Structure formats: structure tokens, C-alpha cells
Length: 68
Image (cartoon, rainbow, N blue to C red; front, side, top):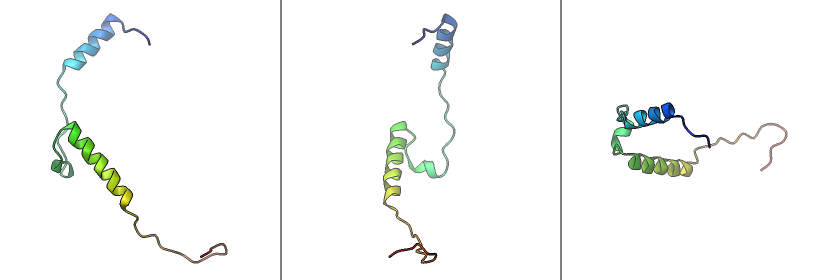
């Protein structure tokens, strides 16, 4: 891994010391606590919940290559 120059190191330290400003939450995001851990838990929950939805898939018996 390449070493940083002194100016690059100073820039990283300067950027790291600046407080991070997050954008305001949207309407849907307000139900989740504004922490990274809570957002991660919600994202994992939503992903697992989306796997359960099968939806409706219409069956079309048309064409010459369909089988039951």
C-alpha cells in the first residue's frame, strides 16, 4: 500500500475532523431511529420481508411450447 504524503495526510486529518452533516430524514425514514445501527436493522428487516412476497404471476397458456 502506498504511503501518504504529508499534504495528503494533513488533508485526511482535516476532513476527518469536520463534523458530518446528514441530510434531513424523508417521511418514510422518520419511523426509524436516526442512528446507523437502527437504519441497518431496518434495511435488513426490509430485505428479509421483501423475500417473503411472491406476488401474483399470471399464467398464460399460449404459444406452442407450454406445458402443465
